Image (cartoon, rainbow, N blue to C red):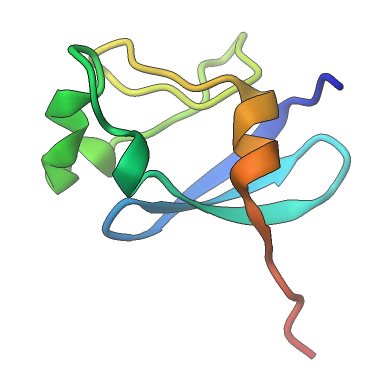
Amino acid sequence: MFTEIVAVAHVGDYRLQLTFGDGVAKEVDLRDELWGEVFLPLREVSLFQQVFIPQDGDTIEWPNGADFAPEFLYEIGVPVLEQA
């Protein structure tokens, strides 16, 4: 399955709300995924908050070049329930 991320919002600590190309919104908590050389700097919340989607990209990225595959994020994400 291939899907793209079309929107991202930091919702607290190491949690992000992602909207995927199929319209599904999910929340991901990346606290336990921030290990290894490229991800360790993201444990600083001020850097983690700088997440963005590159203009020609299909996933989230940080200024230090760290990124995650959109398929992985879709799999670990928890669906966000719509508010009535």
